[in-house]
Length: 333
Image 1: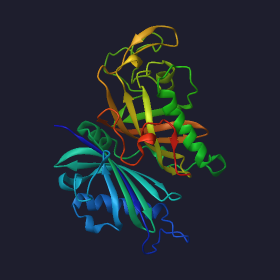
Image 2: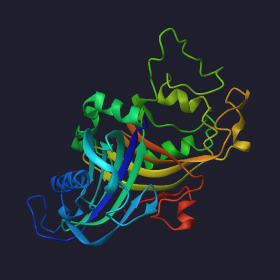
Image 3: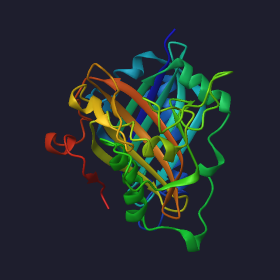
Image 4: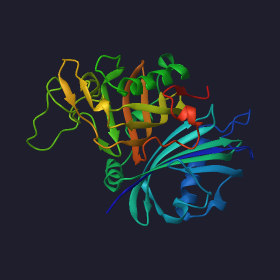
């Protein structure tokens, strides 16, 4: 049985002033989280009339624009037990990673909401239909503590610096040569679709590969070892890098992006030690990704990603064609 992973983005616009609204009309953290919870409840109930909408907000699922009551609104059957909110009160956006049920099959959802004056103006969702991934997230019980931990005031980075540090991850992975500047903390750990993709224990009796001699990168390696191995070179392009939410107080950055595998010349390359290797997918495809970074002291700590395979070269439905093909930073501030 297949699992489903969904990412949803929502935007809210003006409305009645509530307890979570600032004097200038912005929806603060508690207000944004309340609206995100309201959205998930309405989705599970298949009742969009419960939502505080600003007119007819734009709505997409995995890059496809749909009517708000179409798509998942037909197939979702219940909420799951895992959720992780990243609220950005400066830009009025909230991104939520959540497990749900689609006709009773577990999935992972990433939702971005744009909110203005307590009304939703944009809704963007990424759905990852990974049943095992959804079950793994729910087995964790809750998000890692680092995502809720406040960064000490005297150690907080600026919002632009948080984004720049997060972007070094994408830049270091794109046509990875093992020689870049990789801002990984010693405790860096990455989870993708609920599964540990760094520092993994491996199967019983498995031998930990040596990054200097292996022909493919290993989930048993640390974040830094994976990048310094140079064995991620087959990621030919990381584009449409949209930084959609920044929680300055907690050092959190969420990016929506696309990882292209061109299955061409990028598959054959030389490692930092000079060995020629052919690796990576033999068929071209693209990953649609929502990626969350915990950034402190100019370093990357916890990383959590939701991925869904999509047609090669696909766009998000929110960028111009030129921006969707670019690897530049896209960020409203």
